[in-house]
Length: 444
Ligand SMILES: NC(=O)c1ccc[n+]([C@@H]2O[C@H](COP(=O)([O-])OP(=O)(O)OC[C@H]3O[C@@H](n4cnc5c(N)ncnc54)[C@H](O)[C@@H]3O)[C@@H](O)[C@H]2O)c1
Image (cartoon, rainbow, N blue to C red; front, side, top):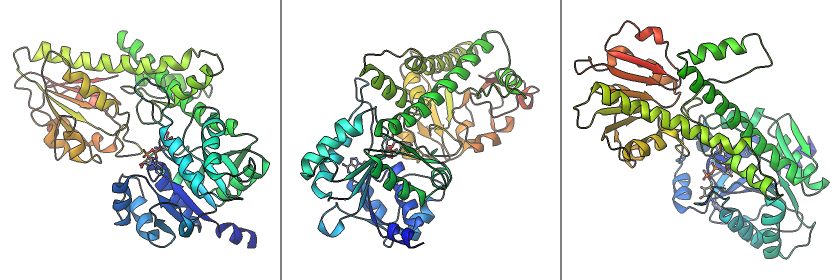
């Protein structure tokens, strides 16, 4: 008990208050730590200071309201009066225009930390990184700024593995993986995370912890892409993909194939396979399966867009700009999120806009703010009913529960010809539309 109290006396500094940093920082506050949060983006800081989270996540608003100004404080940087004992780095690690890892945020965080870290502090890198980044990119820069020796600070890598939309719950239930620079770092980082969750998986090196995150996500992208390829074969043979996947999985524990989607999206799954490939290339190895998965997603999107084009070419040959309603702009709908990074809907919009055939695009998402949809050049509707009314094509692009409420009654009456309802996530029972001659129901 006393030991735990000593641990909770440690002050935690979060560098980056995005999806990962804000949820984790508030979870540490809820566990009893005092947490100081800094984000380089002043708009983010100001919004948070005013009590407004800048993205949607279940339970986030309540937790922010509970701890803001008390156990969780927004600071303007880390200096003498905001010094901490533990720093957690959660800055972004996007890909650059050449599809190479962009280390600029990691570098700037390391430099910032170099100015404030003291002997005995613990630094935890939480961002998803290619293998070797903590040791070879982050540490040298941080040390250079601090003037500290090799083992003066504890350093660990601890990957974030929560699912967006359910992050706050998963932070308290998922095993936390930690790998340190040395045993003392692993132990200390393990103790910090053991205040959140029952299971801490300790690994003997930074790199083993780094690769856990990469293989978790590369694996997910691979199995989703596999399911998507299955749907392409089934489609060509006129088979019901969901039914055959269900049959393949039923009572057969050696097969857990997911259902298909119009392509694998999201900030993490669209880049982490690349980060693993880059890690292999750093050691002269060219991976074969993982680099192909992005091509499968491109093929899915291409196939879907082509089907829309060919439907209107057949059923609205004289229409100047047939109306397409796109439902779902967040990269996924379950668990629900407002995050549009890596969203297949954004890629679909771009593709439709480059076609010779012009379309009137209308969009709706229960969580994405309307202005974000408008920024794509898509008219944002107020409701699902507004979006689909009068549309020639309705395409469901994510698996938000709300889209299950769509019924034949909402769709146009078919006086101009049938309406295509393309349910790319298979949310509906095709039988619900089989008697409605004005609707052509399709799924993957
Ligand atoms: N989104 C997820 O659910 C998720 C899940 C697992 C892992 N990850 C990984 O975690 C990392 C962060 O992801 P995210 O979704 O939170 O990104 P994000 O873009 O939402 O948040 C990163 C934040 O860091 C801030 N930042 C950049 N440089 C900074 C600096 N020097 N000091 C302070 N703040 C700085 C940015 O302004 C931004 O607000 C990425 O590596 C990502 O791959 C994300």
